[in-house]
Length: 102
View 1 (cartoon, rainbow, N blue to C red):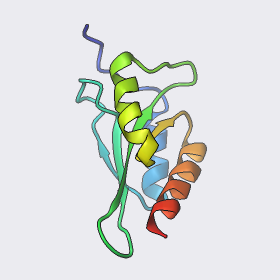
View 2: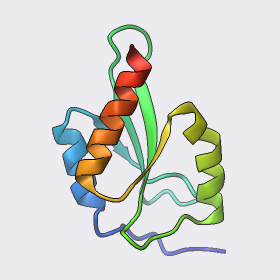
View 3: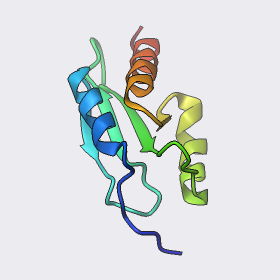
View 4: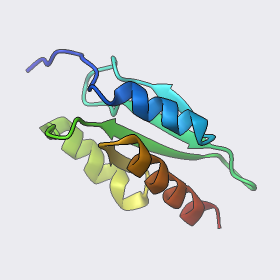
């Protein structure tokens, strides 16, 4: 089944907030195939940069089956997050980042 490749209403706000907080953001929002909307990264003090896939959803949005499969692979490793609003997303990703680089 094909879905329209549209951006959620909060997409731009979340990207802007993440970049303002010092994260690098690659936008995959138009990629399709259940790939999450964003790949967020930040340089680590030592070793490889930290990365996290971010799926942006409006307040009432739900994950599709392919997105749930992606979530099941990366969330247990702390490399996936479902973003609903900018402030919560920045706080959550900062916490994930700090837990990985210690």
